[in-house]
Length: 137
Image (tube, rainbow, N blue to C red):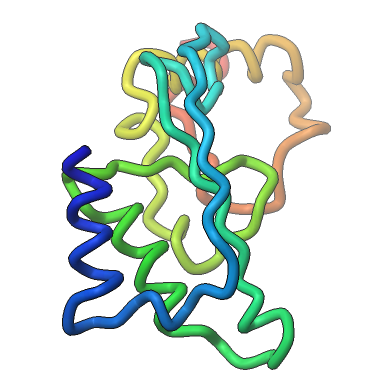
């Protein structure tokens, strides 16, 4: 509730972030799951699906939309997680800290990845997927 209240103030207050949207956000409520990197690991979550149709239709960066994304990612009231397979990582995932966002399972996933893929054949190209697990230690 605090996140949505803060979002409302940013959307309709002096920042006028509403100008960055063209369609309503798709909102879902999802139960918690125990998968290591499940977005709902740690308890139930509210999903917000946002589409940047201004960027799609003009090719110009949509500062108001990015302001909404920034609020979701940086606000202590929101603590939003990005969807693993969606856009947003380039701009809003640069300081990604898996151990902070998935405190009880990030390193477990790293250990499982090292055990199942010791030659790192399936390792990501992105350099922000760092685990504290190390081979043999």
